[in-house]
Image (tube, rainbow, N blue to C red):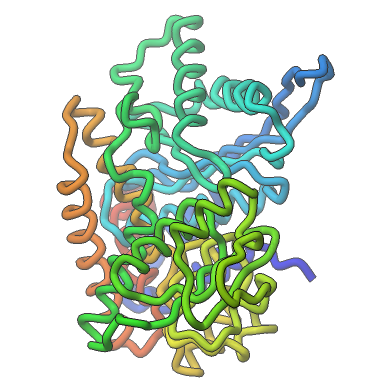
Length: 432
């Protein structure tokens, strides 16, 4: 049975609401009204993009943009290209983005976009036409102070550049004035206002979280500590490379075609070269490497697993088989609510996506700030400021986790949802 990510997101919201409700006894009615608003997105947009293929045919693609909540700032969230994109998936991702921005205490709300497409089936020209068509679809829905999209699964800086150009062309055509068009998107090429360090930000933020967990609360040596990474895209490959450089032992990685495993450890740089040259990590040959499935990777005898692919990969069906001590959620929604409780009861720590992969949106925020100021920070500055925000957010989550004896996701949600609701109540509009 397929698991609905939006149902998971709503279940998580109800759980944290039950923890927060005693804090709002003096404004009970207003709290319930705010909660009702958070149960559904502010705006849901769906369209069909029609583009010409290289062979002269016309092909149509379903596309979405969801804006969940903007009480703390502009909607913020990536755009993914994937054949499995659904309306409920995008709704869930937009909801999680609201919590993610609040966990990091950056002035954004949650948004998300997606196109139902396998980009590997498109030529570069077809990909460009699709991206520009999506940009035109977004033109009247986004802006530097309204909604600021970014890359996500199967999208990148080049695609953001195509979209930005298409949006600006649409503005020129309609006579709309935008104060700063470079602040329309983040995750752009550095030459077009992108931030140094944005490409590695999600993986680097994950490493910062891992280091905080290890140094502050476990004090175990990282040298040789085995890690398995499910998903060797942007987030997973950067995380694996940074982990390798810091002395962790990356023993398994995977992509959509399967995975490879060796207890002796892999060189993520060499694996990435193989993937770029052959299309998959499974073609990596050096050493005694065993081919495994994505499902087998999650159950390996390692200290840390980092799900960095798609949602719902750790469920009530396999949570009892997890052998890792720590799960670091580099993907959005990889662990279901029922699996959360199983892992918690087994003493396995799961650092939730709203913190573990928040490096991407945090450096996107830095990029937006740089664009608005027309000023460029150095990569060193970006890294230093990212680590500081990650450490603060981790410490806040961990304190609540220990103090209230709840699993880390609910600890992170506790502060995040509270921030959002407090902002909603301060702005008024709800009857007591």
